[in-house]
Length: 430
Image (tube, rainbow, N blue to C red; front, top):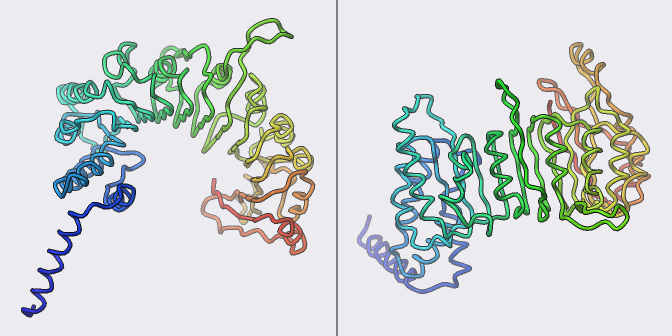
């Protein structure tokens, strides 16, 4: 490096330091520094959490630049807090940043993870020490206004009826969204009883019954009047527990015809994702409870083309849900499905099955109810009484087979696009 280059480098560094002392609008500085904030993985395990906190500590050191940076970085640091709960070795890295949390009101999202990526068995002593430290952190947050709580795996959360009162006593006053991922049956009951009435959004991932000596009982609040969005992904509980959950959705009102108090649903979005024990006929029964179908504006239903598909169920669901704007249905359908759609729908998703490419697949396909809808019947979308902005075609295919790209009739595709409809194709291997 020449002396000229060295002088230029010194000048650049000095100029950069000078710029950091000049205050930027907070909104702009937030957007700039947010790019440096390490992301939280969707399913954080012990290994990824330790790495995350190492990066987060480096990011936190930038608070020393100026008072403005301290304020903005504190806002970013504590807006979403991730706390592990597996062992003391996992929880230790959180001590510094949690001890520096001077304003718990900054915390809007809290994730507690009980997942361990380390196959080494955790001792009882390590587990107890980790739990004690976690509870110390949580007790500091008793005045936090947490809006979203995410619980992943086996955590101490809602293990007992006293957990909330001892750790987050004000949770029910602020909580809007609850996400339960691979959470226990008992803990699910306690969580919903404690905070269910205040929830606006509920998401349950991997909710399933684990066979034990006796069947667990799902306990629920008498009603969930504020619930507007429900997401169920890869859920395999008892089938009756779905009906029990849906029967509590709504606010109590007096029905002058029945002369008694009933629940009226405020649910706007229901998303059934991944695999599920639910069949289309089951969903039909669920959306008829508490007039849930009448209140829905977004309905996404993921089904496989199985022998229990019953194409007529899709038509009946469409007739029940008359306020839909966004309707995605990936089960088999019949022709009357399109004419039964609500006029308000602007986004529609339907599915076709790719032709078989092998003998094994042919045997498998012969057991499925594929419905009538194929690539050759795209024009039947025009039977719908609604004006579509988007049409999403989901192509079901079998793993290890070449991807089937549907070839729609040119005239049919042109006629649909002429109405201002965008056609998208999505591939789903099963």
